[in-house]
Amino acid sequence: MRLILLGPPGSGKGVQGELMQKRLGVPRISTGDMFREAIQKKSEESADLRAYLEAGKLVPDAVVLRTVEKRLSHADCANGFILDGFPRTVFQGESLEQMLQKRQLQLDCVLSLEVPTTVIIDRITSRRVCSKCAAVFNVKTSPPPADGVCLKCGGSIIQRSDDCEETVLNRLMVYDEQTKPLKDFYRQRKVLTEITGQGTVEEIHGRILAALEQ
Ligand code: AMP
Image (cartoon, rainbow, N blue to C red; front, side, top):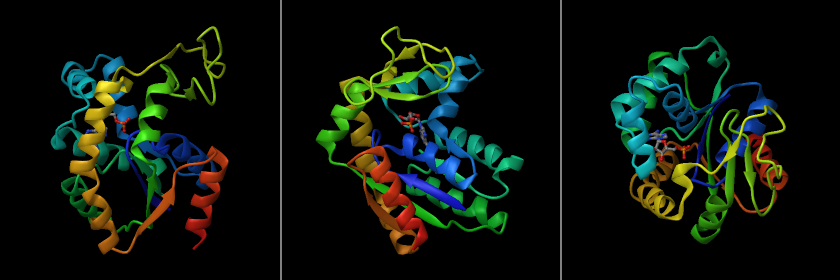
């Protein structure tokens, strides 16, 4: 199954993508995670990437498309994938369409997680993540261990530098201007399903599964 998870930052794409990965047995591909990994590994592009991420700006298309194209050619994508954070612009959506056409593949579904902005700001500024395995916590609803050490991998739990309120507001503006138009793009292609992104993780997961069954 080839899926896209669409939705503003903090709408739960990462958590739901992880659950779907286990359920469907296809990899979750998060461009944001790949860029953060490249920054940590101090790759050639890491200084530039860091500047884009810290400002909440979009990484240039050439870098994004190269990264995604390479990842989609890995053997683990043969039976499908869950894209999280890509595409983020109509141009990226069109480029993905071309990548898939080249491989004679089609998208099965685009799930758009719908969450009001006030809830998003509260969720993101309360979010904490493991710097090693990217496990997600929330200081209000699912607090990380008090010692700040991830139980799964021993990594340290941090607040992402782009999760501060100022950058969040910028990321939401970028989402409204550049990513939201993708909803019409996929609606026209009859693959868009909107999912209410409020409620417990399990409730939202249930809504996603019900939508996929249809
Ligand atoms: P995310 O983890 O999806 O919230 O992404 C974090 C940051 O990575 C974004 O604010 C962008 O700076 C960058 N990024 C991730 N995916 C993309 C993309 N498809 N196009 C451009 N920039 C991206």
